[in-house]
Structures are given as structure tokens and as C-alpha cells.
Image (cartoon, rainbow, N blue to C red; front, side):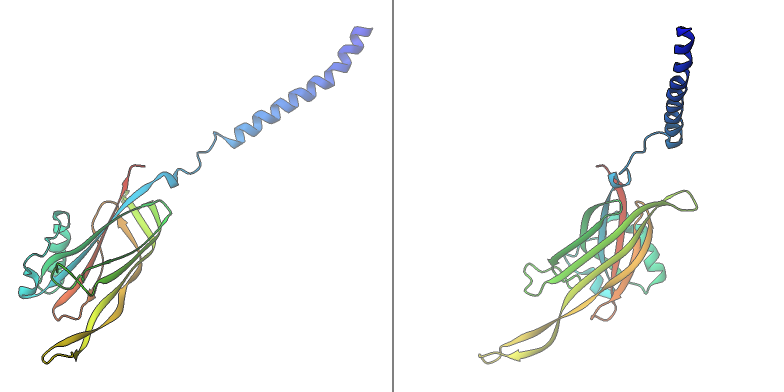
Length: 220
């Protein structure tokens, strides 16, 4: 009799224990395999920004001007087909690194991108570059597309407005005023492919400022 009573008392306990085990298995199945968090943040991009100057006639063949990188030859051919005839030279190159979904902001100074290279410039150009919301996506063709939520390039460019006479006869000094110019847009580019962001007019007739960006994934 005691054995029967013990067995009868044990059955509810066993049933409760089995129910707990079953609930745990079901919860694990619903949750699936553990998720790997932060994988997007492990993606890093190298951003190359090229500033080109397109000039008509002899202006484009300035002595000592840097040549356009070979990687941009295809893009330059397209520009020559759609813009007035001009020669192209490289004014500046910037290389940055940013992680997926991150933000990049740079402020720097350099020579004027619209003038021939000078050994010493007393009127530098100030650059401000912002890249925000860089994300990797797939386009309809299955190729990797990098989208940029905010792209901004700002320049403070020195402009000579007039001249003033100095103390000595025959001497004069330029009066320089800085003006703001730049580009703001939202873009999508194919990974590793040089892409035209836009063009800007300059104070020199027959001259254009060309902005090209290339974004590609790099290691950690």
C-alpha cells in the first residue's frame, strides 16, 4: 500500500518536471540559433575622394600639374563626351576610412584646387568633408551598392576682390575674401567604381571643378 501511495504522489511531480523540460525545448526552438550582433559594424570602407579640374585650352596643360589617376580614365572619357572639350588634371586626393553605418567628418587645409601648384600659398583653401550613413545594400542586378545618406563637401575659397597701394611707390597688395562653395547630396554608388558626384563652376572662364568618389570594403 505504501508503494502504491508513493508512486501516486510521485506522478504529479514527474509530470510537472516533464512540462518544464518541454517548455524549455520549445522556447529554444522558437528562439533559433543565437544571433550574431554587430556584424554590420564589422564592415569598414575605404573612401577615396578625387578633386579634378577641367580646363579648356592651355589652362588644362599646366606645367607641374598632377595627372589624373589611371583608375579614373573611364570616367574622364564619359565626362569628355558630355561636357565641353577640356583637359583634366588632379587637384587633390583624400583617403578616409569609415565603418558601416558610421559617420566621417574631416576639416583640412590645402592649396587652391583651381590654381597651378605653388611652392608656398599664403591664401590656402579650407576643405570640410562629411560622409554620414554609409550602408551596404544589393541593387536589382545583384551587385553591391553602397548608399550614403548624407554627402557634403564644403570649401572656403580665396578670391581676390581688389588691390590696395602700399607705402612704397609702385607696390600694391591684393585684398582677399573667402567665399563658401560646395556640394550636398544623397547618393548610391557601386562598390569600388569611381562615381561622379557633381561639378562646380570656378571664377575662371572655361574651368570646372569635378568631384569623384570611390567606396570599397576593406579588412578590419
